[in-house]
Image (cartoon, rainbow, N blue to C red; front, side, top):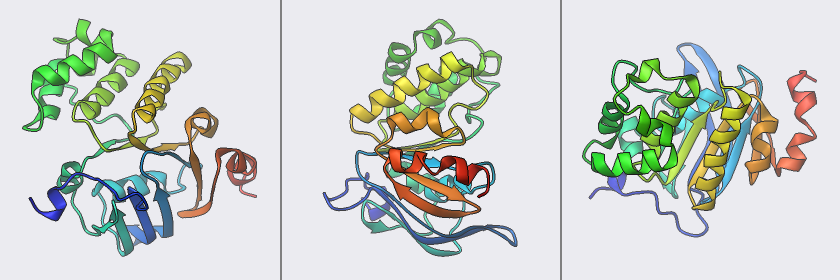
Length: 244
């Protein structure tokens, strides 16, 4: 087993995720300007900011979907700058991107089968998914694209959780969902945090996630401008969102 195949098992003093002075670009346009970010092991960190703040780009860098142009990415104390998305998955980093990332033309069961791969059996994936979200069990033979938005998000979460991730990256979990469904989704997230899963949540609607968070980071224009307790960050939200 090589370094990049070992699951994330940080030493007590090592953050499970750490970005140091990270720059990243979309072509010639720089999107991140020296971002510093720490996710302690077992913590829930809320990544907050308006549209265009750099939250999704930060998530892509951590998940290996976007390269770092300078700076470094560390997982469990190891410098993994340049890591690929496949390698991050092997390390136990699981990402649910904005837009959910399911296969619309496959059934619920087939989506779980694809997510299971060689790491876990389909039976085990289904058992976890249907116990957590009984509605998915009722729709196991239904095409994922025909599910409601809330059910699609349940499926996306189930695909991630069935592989027992060490780190869960959630990008705009609430997007397009009814308030009642958002509450249900974040109750699941709260339960995962209680089980010890490290979670980084990117949300535009900050007050949805602040009650769940141990720490919060405020991003504006591609920079992490403030980090602190949810209470401290909440006091600065109005100014940041209004561009003050």
